[in-house]
Length: 263
Image (cartoon, rainbow, N blue to C red):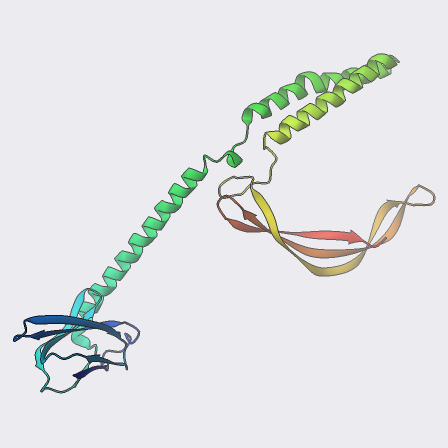
């Protein structure tokens, strides 16, 4: 048997709302039942094929029953026409409330999952700044580097070149040690503003010409080695650096202006 269902809405504004058409067949002689379901939009026709003589047709919006036609037989019309009408407005509102509640639940679960992910990511080694190293670097700069620099200046004034040279070496060594400790602490690393990881990289750079202009500047003459005022031609470019965090996959853009001189 071929049985068709045609949808023609009388209530406007819900043509894109899918309606589920369920056909439930049964045969009393054979004690057999079967079910078929298809979705239909306004203006569409769906067709079912089955062998049973008796069947029920029910239309649903979500989990809510819209209409039902019980105890149809093969002797009835082979096409059923229905549509959303004013009397169905409460059913549609109940369905919309269910959809809204489901969306809010989904968004809540997504937020909770994101919060859990951020909490888990906070334990990653790339997010940690070694405060102990920062403190050590500051103490070395305070008690070794600064006195060595100050002492070398005093030795220069007293014309004690041997002491001055020794203190300069001490200052350079201390400077290198302080710099290494500060860098290894991660204090000055470029970091993700979302998870604080230093696993960031530039995956794309765009450069756009902005303009060329002339500017008067105090520059050194290459021939005379003296400072003088000259007109310098400059060119500006809009630069966009696109960053990505390899830990949390967050992406962001850093925009700035780069200036070049023609002479």
